[in-house]
Picture 1 (spheres, rainbow, N blue to C red):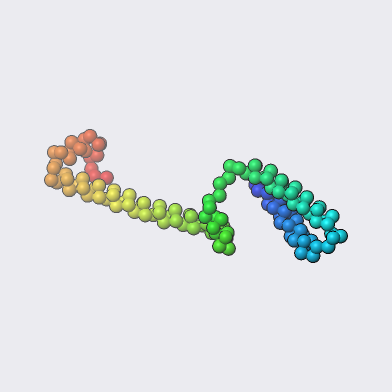
Picture 2: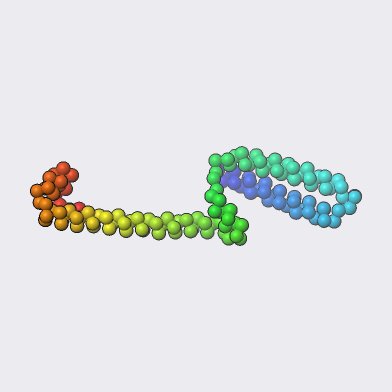
Length: 134
């Protein structure tokens, strides 16, 4: 999989360099440089074809739109991954806290109900296999 990315990166670097050179030729265009311009345009077309071939190899890869927003804002796209992991960790801690709270509530509820309704709670515990509150 890494070689696919390396191939794409190499093709993109070649394409960018070709575009840079094309910009230089166009900015200082002389009729005598028409052959060089045509050659660079042909290189640009073949570069786009190479990039298209790479795209077909990487069609199964999905990139979240937020990553592109990070790039547009001039931020490092790896920060997106870091922030996603931090949000997931924070959410995990919240959910764990809720689970712990509900477990304590269940235990307290069973304990209190056992005091008020001992027969019914005995049946409940027999059905659910709970001898003592968990």
